[in-house]
Image (cartoon, rainbow, N blue to C red):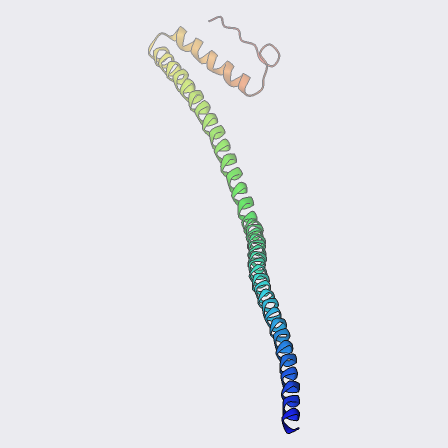
Length: 172
């Protein structure tokens, strides 16, 4: 009896052991599957993290480039705005210089014309001085004619008209 009971207990324990071994195998299989699933999830998370890191870096670079471009455009606009008054002043100065050169050229042209006129007048006065010298050194008839010519010129320069306000009777 004792033997039977022990044998019965042994069978029961063996059955329990088999059940527990089957349960252990099942749990081990589920654990291994769960571990494989967790490893796969971990790989997916790492891949996702790498993709997100790359995307974040790309996004950060794009934002940096946009900000840099905006800053560059803003600096360019500021520089243009700052240099605009100088450009206008420089243009005004250039126009003044051109106008001054133009006026100076006109004045030089006018001065050259006046110098030519003075040269012609000087030549004419020299001729007249020579003629006067000859007349003064020559005979009385030439001196008289010369005097009448000078007097006629003086009267005409005074605004008198020959034939109306005075008469020239000599024939030279």
